[in-house]
Length: 230
Length: 367
Image (cartoon, rainbow over all chains, first blue to last red):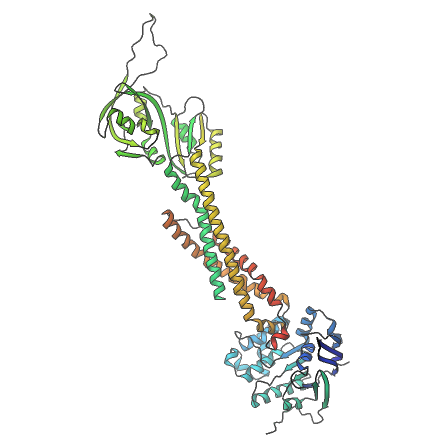
């Protein structure tokens, strides 16, 4: 059984079909990237997979459970237990330190554990920045805190929305390396990106156009390492 | 948040201050009303009563609430062969129960002195320092002897010095006042009291209940309220307290509006954070608990600050308006804090409701 399966999924806003009969399977431990131009339905798909929205039609099976039929409260529970979210804008709470931002995810999941949160920061190479506020961190460091927060509760899937959109090349490489590390540990990754270099690192690349899957490319030379053209 | 804290603190200050004044107004106004004379009168149930009974009755009032007691014994006396009503009293007691008496010269202070009502002084052309004889004809049952001849009754005569002239604008100006000892000596003995006036610092039901307790317990004394004083005192107090209550309610309502507006602004400002919290697993209940916790904590701090400032505010009002200080009421601190917590909690309901409506997907897209 696939970890995630979208069956004939539609998302319709009036006349607009943001998703139009989308079918997709993501296996456990797979690294998938989703590409497409603006308005192609990437964000809508991410919101639905991330349990933040429901499809107008179709089934979305996450670990065998059709999340399209779940209540708002259950979707929150599923999101909390199974999904780790990484955002382009990082979305760290500005009055909490790096370690407290990581512990925030623990707080809603179970019990905050500073030691574990520090270990997560260590995994992303930020152990020495644990007590810093977001404004004292660079963009790349903030994104790494965001990654640490996403993985702290051992989610089934890490869902990243333009994770390198606000980063320079050096930090982009660091974040992609982190994804590679997580993937090699068995974490399932779904990365929505505009950046072809980041998209090409994944095992499978899906291209959306006008709410439909226009292309699906399997990376035969998967290394998990980013290759810059220049 | 600082604005919300300040508005709660100001609201709590006004609340605490006005409640202090609300409870202190009866005492303050009571003291003011005591300037208008006695509010309780003891009269004889049957014929007369004694000073002991007056004291027994006065002891029924709460300790410290009796401002003054003035017993009166009235006798018909004569000055220059003209009849005048003389009142024997306790001069110190009268000073307290009738502070509005205007005396030209000296107050009655000791035996041998006479305080003369203005009308009597006019009639006899008396002034401060005048020396006059006051005579009293003893009352006897037998006016004739066995032979049917009229018995000559010798008057008791006592010489007094006029200490001062009394001006009240009322019937008191038609009397002469002397000490109880003098009137007893003049009347040939006895310790009869006809009326006693009491000035008591109490209002409403307390006064009524004590008066009826005196009527039940103290024999030979009939206590009653001076309605024109007690009723107008009650009316003024009720109106003042109603005004204070109204202002308190208006202030609380304004505080609620201010807190609700501030909390709405806080929620709007933190929409992204709320969205993030929901995205990483916060349920609506967690959001409600967090914001309600913050509001209640705000109410606690504001209430604590306000209860201290409120006492200072009430003290200033009391000193400037009533020229007396108020006592600190410790119970008002928890009451103010709880009221502030309730007000902030209630004011935050609508903003918190809007916080739960934040859609994490929309917020995280920066919409």
